[in-house]
Image (cartoon, rainbow, N blue to C red; front, side):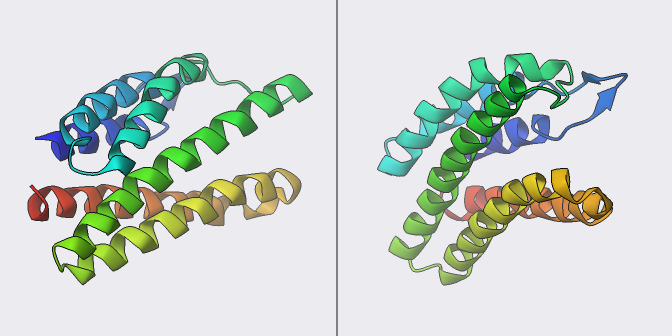
Length: 163
């Protein structure tokens, strides 16, 4: 049941905005993720770390309900801090899945979780490249959708394999 809550929470992390308002607020997603990880944190220490980070991200993601454009250094630093925390969260979530998959001998899930983590890292870091090279935005958008789908399907696979 924990992975289902994480899956549902991850759906809320998709940025769907109408007139700069996030229709699927990230903080609600992080609440579901926190609840899911609360059910799984006894399985692996990395899930406990991801749970702690998801709790912090609940509060840090509240301002993101309204689109904060990066126009001043303070907003840029806030965005950078959020990205770093989110990357640690993703790292602990997917490497936790990978480690458990290795323990149960499911190398397909282990490899998939590892690839998911690496691509999520590449996607997050590529945002800062797009700031300086705006014509890459379309590639960034397509890459983001692919990574998002990979994250969701990996979590779904973990839920049907691990628990």
